[in-house]
Image (cartoon, rainbow, N blue to C red; front, top):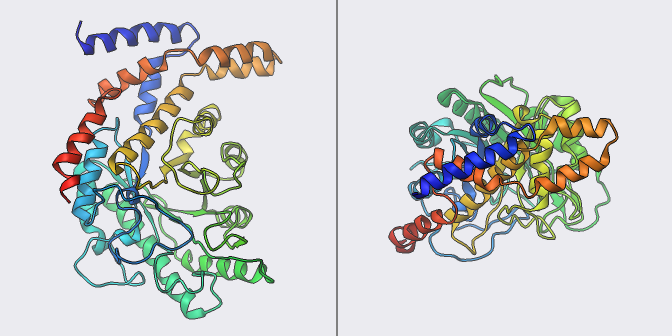
Length: 420
C-alpha cells in the first residue's frame, strides 16, 4: 500500500467515525475548500515595504530577528509568496500594505494610484488570488510626534486623509479587476506615551478625518472599508486614539466593518468572546489572526486554544459567510516562507476541527440542560481523527502532507533565499 492509499484508507475510517456522530466529512471538506484566508505580505520582508525600505519601522510595532532570505523587491516577495501558496491547500487572498507599491516612479503616500499596483493585480490574476489592502499610517516622516489622522496639525491630517482616500480607490480597483471584493483596512497607531490631559480632542479629530476619507461612496461589491482598534503600542503605552470603544461606535454608526486583531487587546482578553456580540449589530466582520505573547508581539499563529476558539465561534454561530479572515504576524527569527505556511495551515486546521463538530447536536444538549453529555462529547471529540481528514484535504489539493512541506522550504532556502 503506497502513501496515497494509506491516506485514503485512513480517511475512510475517520469518515465512518464522524458519520457515527452525524458529521458528513465530505461536506465539511467542501466547506473548508471555499474558505479563503487573506495572507499578509509583510511577513516576507519584516514590514519594510518598497517605498522607503531602509527607513525605520515605526507605529509602535517591532520585527525582531535576522534570519537570511528576506525579500528586497516586489519580484522577490512574489516569488516567496508563490512558494508559500504552493504549500497551502486551497485558493486564498493576499493582503497588501500601501508601502508595497511596485513602480519605478518616485511617489509619496499621498500620491499613490492604482497604476502603482498594476503588477500586483496582474500577478494575482495569474495566480488566481484575490487582494486586500491597507493604507500605511506609519514608517513615514509625516507621522509627526506619534500622530497621523488625529494630529493637531492640519497639514499632517490632510496628508494622511489624502492617503486614505487614494487607498480606498486602489481597493476598489483591486475588486473590479479581480472580480473579488477587496477589504481595505484602516489602522492608525496614533497615541501618547504618557498619560494625556485631553483624551477627547484627538478622538474627535480622528472621527472627522475618517468621515472625510469615507465621504465618497464606493461600491461595496468592489471595496469594503474596515476599521481596526488597538490597546497600545511601543511609544503609545498610555493612550491609543483608535481604541476598541472608539471603533465599535464608529463602525456601527458609519456602517463600517469592524476588524478585530487577536493581539490588540489586554493580554488576558480574547477576541473569540467578542465575535458573537459584534455579529448581532454588524453586517460583517474581519479578523487579523495573530498570536500575542504578553503584548502585541505578532508571533506566528500556532494551534493554541484561542485560535481554536476563534474557529469554533465562527462555525458554531454560522459566521463564516460574513467574516473575512486575515492573518497578521511577522517573525524574522525563522524562515519567512515557513512562517506563512505554518500560520495559514494552522488556521485552516482550526477551522476544520470546528467544522467537524456535531454543532446542532451539541446545541440541543445545551438547550436540554444536558451539560454532562455536552462535556463528554467535547472531550471525546479531542481524540477523534481530524488529522486523517486534514491529510486527505491536503492530498486532494496536491500539497505536501505532514512534515513533507518542510523539505520543500529547505530546498527553496538553498536554491533561492540563501543566495540573496
